[in-house]
Image (cartoon, rainbow, N blue to C red; front, side, top):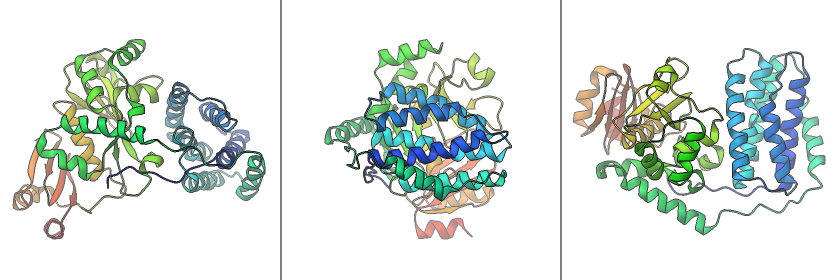
Length: 383
């Protein structure tokens, strides 16, 4: 892992075709009895169409569209209707990513569109995907097929400067782990303290030195969940930073009633309905929204939280890890960890986190998730 994840470039014609296809599927879903209206999806598609026409789409408009889309997706996901679940699969977020970065995500977008059509058919809706694709292709013919401009060297240099600051904010002994995970930082998703303070105040969220410092050190951090090329363009990462969270949630989660009482501020969002917060003192919390009533302690400070997110992305949240996933019994962890020369970075009543050159192990509420980095470790942990 590591290195900037760049893809080929999309074009106005390609984006117009993909957006029209997604919109056509959405229209068929919405027209069906009991189908979703998905107003956030429609508003986001309007923004994509504006970009295709050559209109200026501001970062603020993109952030607002993402926030509304994220909340709409949450409602679609919990609905039992296959038609609603079909709308959930529609790759509107990926279309917004093309608007923002210009990457060619056609394969991923088409795959997710096919997933949506399969789900719709389970709900009794007959969707002729090939006919819709032909119509979308004809619609897009009027647009330019020249590729979008790519990121500049200045953009990459700015990202690297910020990533260097993030590394420096971590204990020296664990920076290798940060590098091994291929973490990157996106300068476009972080902001200055004054603007962040104003954004927090606008949402009636507390401003603290701890949250401002976390933004400066880690705002815009992208922790990849896969070793596959294009993870950044595909959105296969944990996004970190209070400003990035404000930009993707029109109503910022508070960690349940207990979290709101503690003045928690959302600072990261994982891939499995998991949200992460800091309190005014800088202590970290996690809220697994599907099975926890409120946020629970999850680290002494922001640096520990970032390390936990990094380790999680390499083990129990990994999509395609850079090693062999192993699941040894909890009773063997301490002995095997010592034999492999692992260090226990931190522990609490819910978890233990072991790292080393040979392996990474997480004991999470009785279950063990590991990544063997050497053949010896793989053999020892799979006995």
